[in-house]
Image (tube, rainbow, N blue to C red; front, side):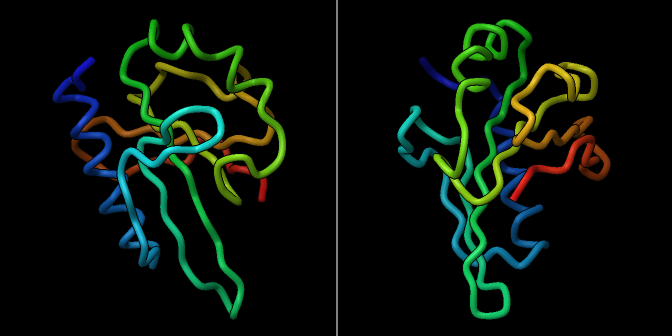
Length: 119
């Protein structure tokens, strides 16, 4: 199944965002225990390592088809912090795993952190 151009735009934007946040190892399509993570990054933070995983969702159907799987995930299965990134309003904070964060991006402006991920 190939990615849509909207999905790729979101992936490209989150990569830029992570570079801006000083993540120095950034990869797309990283295998993790529950599937493949769209974007994964790591940075050194005062001698400790901080990792982040971002799942991009650009359609409601894609989110709903996997939402029960994501809600069951606990702990650091993918990274120290795990986020969904989607267009504004596609996913709302109460629909996701309490440990996960939520980023919205409208395709032009800055990324908005709607819910902070638990570390």
